[in-house]
Length: 377
Ligand SMILES: NC(=O)c1ccc[n+]([C@@H]2O[C@H](COP(=O)([O-])OP(=O)(O)OC[C@H]3O[C@@H](n4cnc5c(N)ncnc54)[C@H](OP(=O)(O)O)[C@@H]3O)[C@@H](O)[C@H]2O)c1
Image 1 (cartoon, protein in one colour):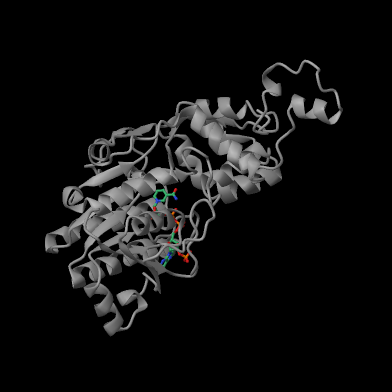
Image 2: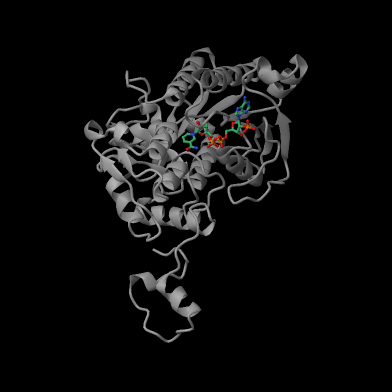
């Protein structure tokens, strides 16, 4: 085994933080899990993490010294080798000052802790600090004067800039930038249905039928288990990772790919992507307009972007191959949403209907009959 590390994970109860905590603890490291409002650690598959070696510490990154007494802060700083900084506000549509306090000031306070104890920092950013740039986005790029789509992205850019600047006064750091974090690569299982999942629900239920966007736009979905593996390896192999940035991304899907997969599910409504110049909010039915304004508008720019993320640093450092993604992965995510009930009960396939009518032995061949997983595609 590699050297046993003493690691502090912030945001340890979050979707990504819990998976990173589980991996580091399982690898034999001494993990301190910084928790905030949620004191219980639960893995992505819903299993409580009672792994040996995990100590929970309640703290608040928005406060100087993380809200700890001077003595406790000093003791914490002196007892860690590495910090994995996952804590952040990740949902959209909050007041700008919330993002500043948690994502930017919170990172500044975590940097102070690293500086006080000489700990190394693995900062979890977002691939979408690229804002609305199109084309190939390099891991070496950060502030290219890009237009940022929302206060979340802007705060993550400011936070990452702080991390870079702190290198000048001796804080060694590496940055991992996930794209849009979704369910497990092989099972599709996800603990929290947030962000893109909410849009998926509103559209498949027909509550939102048209969205301004372009069918050639690309969405990059990355499995949570892969993201956690990348962060864990960057933490363990920090000497090789220091000073570098790692995109933790999947294979982007176009909105055309999305629409085609959604059309395979008979219970789904498939939204129409309308060129932004001809989208007219005023013509939407009242209820749809409300959903649009409250939710979809927050994600709208993601339906226009045509970026691709270079992940050369990650490919070089991380042993696990990059996720294949593609339409099969999207089907796995959707199937899990159906099986878990998040997207409502799947329509029964022909085989199920005939079985219920006691017509066994009837010829049920054809695409809808092939419904062993109950997804009703
Ligand atoms: N999820 C994605 O799609 C995605 C994509 C790209 C990048 N990322 C980045 O990945 C990291 C982890 O994301 P995630 O999806 O795991 O987020 P998450 O599930 O929303 O978890 C965020 C964690 O931060 C904690 N936190 C919030 N305010 C805090 C405070 N004042 N003090 C201490 N902790 C606080 C939360 O604790 P409480 O809930 O107890 O307050 C929560 O455990 C974030 O930096 C995010 O920006 C996420």
